Amino acid sequence: MKRGTAQLGHASIHIGYSGIVEPNQRGFARELTEFYVPEEHRGKGEGSALLQDVCNQADQHKILLIIIADTDRLAAFYARFGFKPIQVNPILMIRPPLIVEILH
Image (cartoon, rainbow, N blue to C red; front, side, top):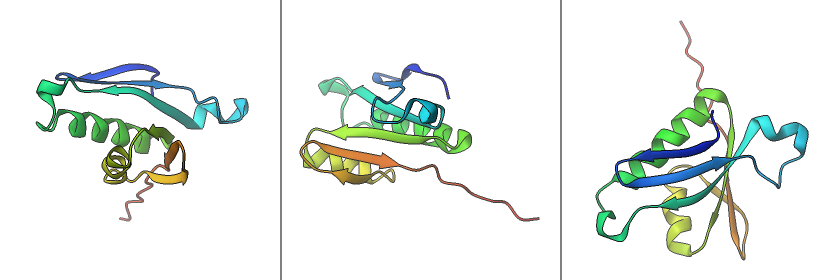
């Protein structure tokens, strides 16, 4: 999963290494920051689609995602994508990769 800025429509999010993860574990975790959708484009699904795409990529590469929710409303939004709070004030949330095995 590449570091940098991901975009979909008017939504954007920065994907980078996390400072809260041990340096030798950084390949297994990414911190999401600067998640932004311009106000006039909110409520149209662009942010949800972008975050779902990032989550799908993280699952594919078995990467833990980390994000800080500035408000309870944002925490509820992130929870819809599998993020779980591990700290309050600020609300720090993680999302372990979903690992799906396909049996033949």
